[in-house]
Length: 172
Image (cartoon, rainbow, N blue to C red; front, side):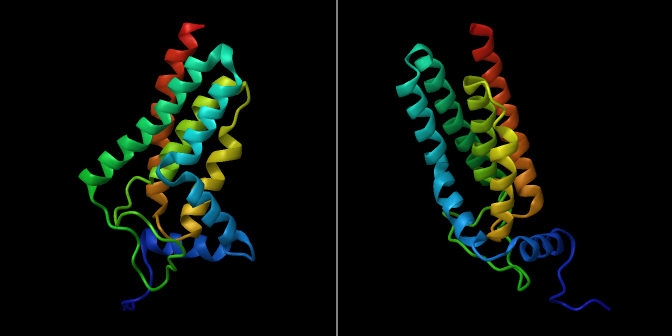
């Protein structure tokens, strides 16, 4: 017979991931990433900086920045429809506050992936491998999302970012 508090399924995966990722200093880094990505504000600010510095493509940077905000807003809309609660199990330690109790999809994963895809097109560098995995891992480390929340958020942000990037690329 299984014990009541024994984690199962995604909770077990989350607890293992959290145990693996939690090292000295990683929680502070993850909290910083969480703050940066909150409401997509950090990614939006970077897009505005790109618009200020790259006058020739200012409109594209502004469009990409709006796309990041739009991806975030879309993830919030999906959260309100799905209404999946955040992880709540004794084996998972929640290490940061959240603006809501809703978990699916991860808005941080959505906006980060959208930003990585969109800003990759504008910088000429593939930013996805450098930006997306650390943000997804941080959400698991902080105990605020299930693995499918971050994977779905990344896929959703990738689709939204890809569609907008395709429109920007066609203009050139």
